[in-house]
Length: 104
Image (cartoon, rainbow, N blue to C red; front, side, top):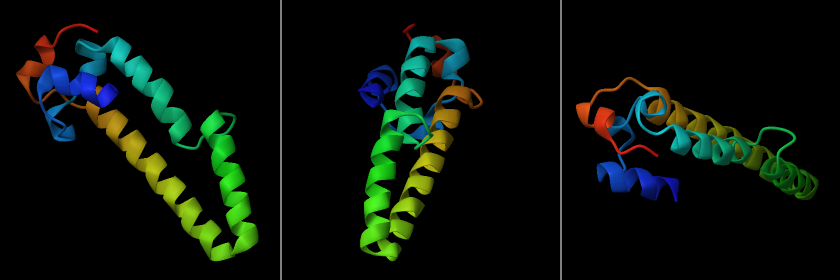
């Protein structure tokens, strides 16, 4: 949904085309994205973290290599989500069109 909102405003999915949206034009989109990205990143005490813990616990019990691969995937996805969030919402404004997006 959030990718669609950003696409409707810029007509691109390229992360490099965005930047600085949190400060300029999209504070509500930033807040909503934050609420959705943090739990998916696997941080403790959040619902997605519970899912990850249960799945990884079962994988470690079945075969430790599956648990190691799964934990590596969780770490990589958390890193990617945080990297994407930082670039889109807090990065440098490289394109002037980002300064004139409709408010959300």
